[in-house]
Image 1 (cartoon, rainbow, N blue to C red):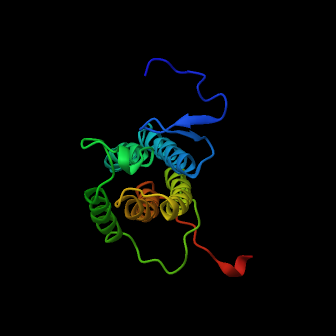
Image 2: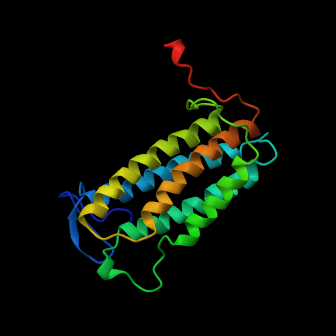
Amino acid sequence: MNRIYTKAGDGGDTRLVGGQKVRKDSLRIEAYGTIDELSACLGLARTALGAPGAPAGAEALAAILLRVQNELFNLGSDLATLAADRRPQQPVIEERHTTALEKEIDGWNATLPELRSFVLPGGGMVAATLHLGRTVCRRAERLIVRLADSEPIGAAVIPYVNRLSDALFVMSRHAARLYGEAEPLWEPEKT
């Protein structure tokens, strides 16, 4: 991991975990590259949560985002490995990861006001960054579903990514409340 460049990808190819050479624009690479992009969005939100003057509860949300970033690396490992090359101890996404997200969603959602309209992305820097992450997560999900139509992937991958986008929506609402920011709501008559 000390060597940053190898020049092996200069022709537009890369290798999967099992050593198979694939084009860098392949659906599998696009899928786990988008998961990496999502992790970067969560890193931005986590950094904002750690800024001086962050409200009570910010540290707990940052810890969950750090855990999710680690899970996204497991997901990337899952997607970067063909089913035939998967090792027994390889980190992958499991059903337990989805279950943890569901418990967190339920806990936050129980404390939030009922929605009567769609929420527009906003509600402060952290909430807006989590909304950005949610949209990247949805794009990743679309790519992963396309990939699953043509190649086998881990059984827990699609449910996890689907639930993660839900979790990011609820986290954004939670973050807006933590920071005392109003959630902008869709008002169709203002168009």
